[in-house]
Image 1 (cartoon, rainbow, N blue to C red):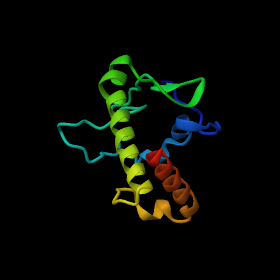
Image 2 (cartoon, helix red, strand yellow):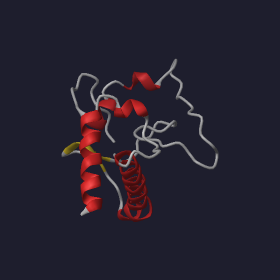
Image 3 (cartoon, rainbow, N blue to C red):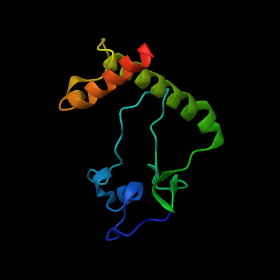
Image 4 (tube, rainbow, N blue to C red):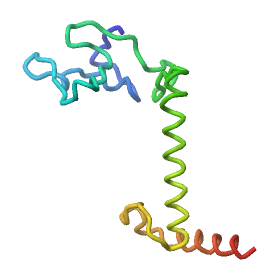
Length: 126
């Protein structure tokens, strides 16, 4: 990956490279606390000075390259898990049961919760 000019104004993931000084402490490469079994993600410049191929999509500021293998093995199962957990908790909220959604996320949304509960009751009685 080519070095980006510090003065460039960018959006999305590429803005992380606009000012690389945040990754340096007295010209030393930061060492993240990761397990030896799970190496740290190194995006951009490596500790020994080389650059990796950019995972970013130039035409999409927030895009990220994902291989078909990553999609099949990691992304799709993860999204299915998140979706099923979210759906389970939303149903529990609608039915007034115990759920895993933080109370602060529900503050100020009583009218929405009442509407969801009413629709749930109507759907179940039909």
